Image (cartoon, rainbow, N blue to C red):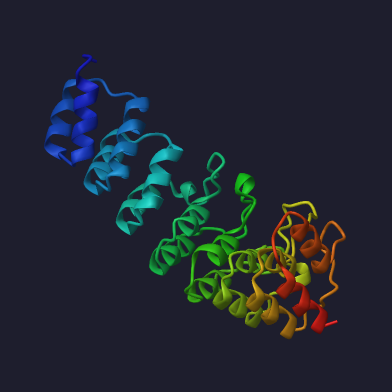
Amino acid sequence: MEPETEPRLIEAASDGDLEQLQHLMLREQSDERLVQKLLAVAAWKSQTPIIEFLLSEYSPSSIDEEPVRAAIYSGSIPLFSALLSHDPSIINMQFDKRGTPIIVACMSQKPLEFLRFLLEAGADPNQDPDATMTYPLGFVAVFYQDCEVVDLLLEYGARLDQSGALRLAAWKNNKAMVRHLLKRGADHDNNRSDLRKPSKADLALHAAAKGGHIEIMKILLDHGVSPDVKDGAGNTATQIIDETERAGKDLSEAKELLSRYQ
């Protein structure tokens, strides 16, 4: 390949110039590396016709991670569908240190319709999240206010137990999400992520207490959570408060609230 050809191919893929891309590709011997690179460029720019052309004419044996991630970030159902039609296995692809397609979609706050599309296509909401250490429900608890997203994941089989969702919603001070997770049956004492070793402040009450999130603490305590429940390191919420106050943060209101429930 002539040195100037690859940059021109990349530019054509980025701009969505299908005619120019076809013209240049006819003149050159394409290889798998180049096709994957062009797929990634086109995916980042949401150039669905370019994606469809490359997959149809050059049919890579598989699809690399970058085009799949780019398609997720685009939130485009037609774009992701084009990749999925060529390689159905990408729906549960394990990204390097980034989780899975459904996790990336939740982290980037994609709309309900896009999440539903992924789940209907076979995305597993309970798949080992690997390096992210958090299931999709956990990211929803942090990044979403719309509780319908929780209902959607539960509809497609997401587990509440061991998901970490309640703890993360409490940590984020997401009151609507804490209420909804409790309504849907989240068990405070069984809501650590099962990928984490028991650790300090790994329960919702402790996370709320450490952050000084008084209203969250009250929601949990009114729901029946014991003020004396111990985290994975054997600490009560009061002990977490004492430790945090020694570091300079005033949590007297949180401590007083706990005392009223004891």
